Image (cartoon, rainbow, N blue to C red; front, side, top):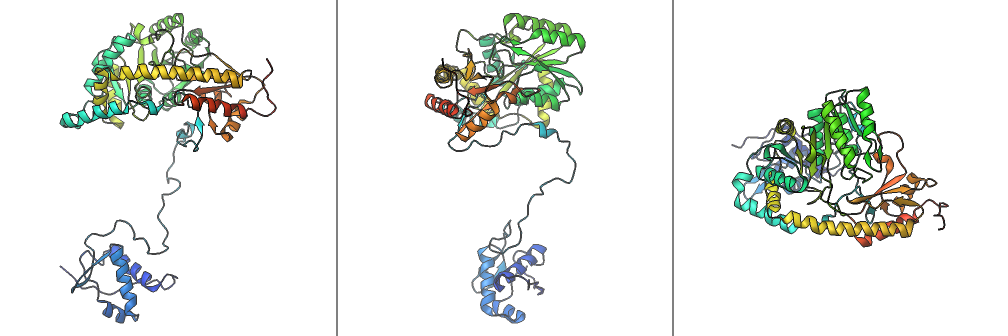
Length: 497
């Protein structure tokens, strides 16, 4: 039902915009205020021009602008009407009114905890070569096989996989993981002992929330994985660093700590210690399990790249020798498939898994069921195992290229042990070189890398680089090391040999 429009336009006389634009703005303001509703008739151009004492062509131009921007519509022989579907945004071309912006700061207090978290969101500059901390090469991901499996899932089982599911994860994937972990890593786990997560970091966060009470002491490797420390701190843990040597965590330091204070949990990376890549010895593993059982202490084992071991058989996880239920085992499929596909898992006694699932449901009702089922099919068919073998051969070759090029280009300036597994190499920088200055100058040469400071719980950290080799081709690795050599601080030459 059309209603008459009582003319009450407020045309801005102080604006430098053309009169037809100011008239358009005035009509839009009446629409936004509700004085004009969708379907209402606008005055004829002649009548409005006479009322306002302006030229009819000015009104024509204003109406055309309203029509163009979606605020009005013209009907032949009937006139111009307020549009039935109004624009969501203020129409462009309506002048210089300032755009609304989100306030730079909230009006309420924040406690500042997020300031301790690292910012990894900045993209690498174009053309830069990145020695990351051990990410796989997405160019090798089994994209074709995954897309086929995903298509089969969506077309064949859409009604079940697109519905709400178990917060512990897709049952098919939990069964496949339990079978795989039993066959390849010696874990005596069933479907109910597995929680699927969106990457291992979610698993670590949930474990920290489930385990830690404010003020609890958690022992960590003094050179280690900062995101895990962040999760533990957010849960209220007091972190105590334990030294690491060429054989992994020094378990005797944990024993000394236990003699002084109760310890709720210890976080370890025994297979390929992060960041140094060394493997915890068998004797230290057995002693760690004995200490945990005697003290009622949890062991959080992060086995982040178990698939990539090159020399001999991979060392079995701590969890494979756990008979007391002390170990919470955290793993990932993201390094095997692709980092952008966030799939991880936690293996623990069923009551722990149920607790983790309850916490997970608070922030994330469930995972991506179609993706989880697709990956389960790839595991059941052996496709991921075949991909792992292909990727392992390629990454071993890249490790060897990196080691050879470091010896050639940087012999005398860095030393290292060729790691038996993993996707990165720990390069120790000679004492006379400024490692932070070197990293800064490398950035100018187009090489990004991380120094030992990023992995230290306290203090400046060791004089070292962690050089991820998996995501760069052999050609890229050689070029990156050459750039790194050019960036070595001036006047700091390698000694002659």
